[in-house]
Image (cartoon, rainbow, N blue to C red; front, side):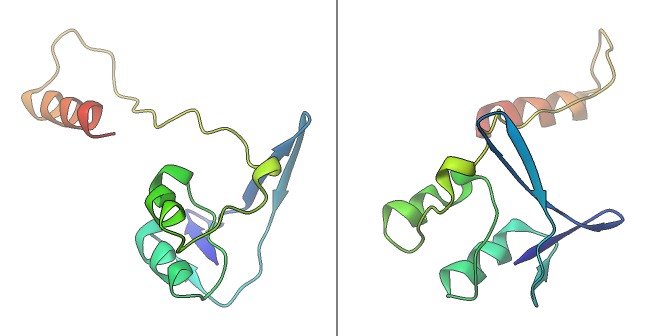
Length: 103
């Protein structure tokens, strides 16, 4: 399964023993969100390339299996970048606080 990105399709990224590999996947299904991609994978439509933390419960319950584990690059976590200002707007403070505690 493929995921659309700005200007094209997302290439799957793999790494092992210091070697990086990007693969442009061919397939009939294209998604713009991880949730329907995961639903399609659990329904048997194909392989989904998503962060493991999004599917860990599916793996634990046997609905999905981890493949190419030795080629999976470590996930350093999500990052949020925003302008450096002493005083964040109230809206930005709420968003950053919510994301910090949710993820």
